[in-house]
Length: 218
Image (tube, rainbow, N blue to C red; front, side, top):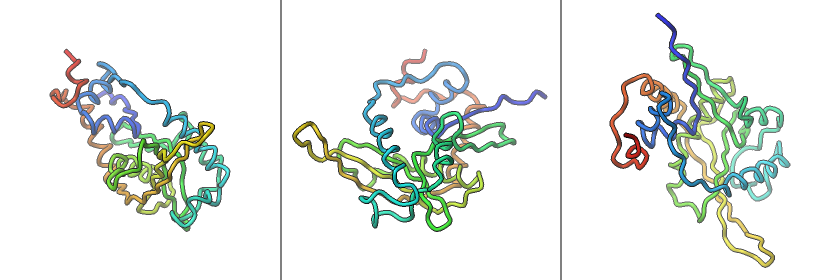
């Protein structure tokens, strides 16, 4: 029996699986890629600026976060750079599923001797109490990837929300900062990955009436 073709997934790919299994199946079976729609470039620009800013505080914390989150930023810049690198990242290989999962971390905290993922998010307004739920899978996956690569993790991660507050003269925009501590579940991430791989190798799912992209497929 010929070996199965290896499946490679990312944290963002699994978000498509959550959103629409059929779009996910079509893309990973080579039928068609899901249209991306209109994408805002501002969050990517803010993300790049924040990475450079946080890099100035390796082994410590930016002053505005001291006393608001636990731990300190990982002090190994080369290691973090490899986790951010799209050609490297953090990778989990499953030889039984013939599949791999890769994630790219924004940042990482050391809490004692354990690792906790940290991710920056840009929002148009102050985050609601349940804003973290849209990124729960992402933090779960990052925790799982750290653990399976030999890094002992905490049972939580952090989302740092940046949201505009007021514009000042000269065009400077002041951002509010809202950190959120989020409990993580590594087993949930592994289960999500396994279900997604199983779906790819199974029959084509039915159309989802709630998905505008499914309706485009004929």
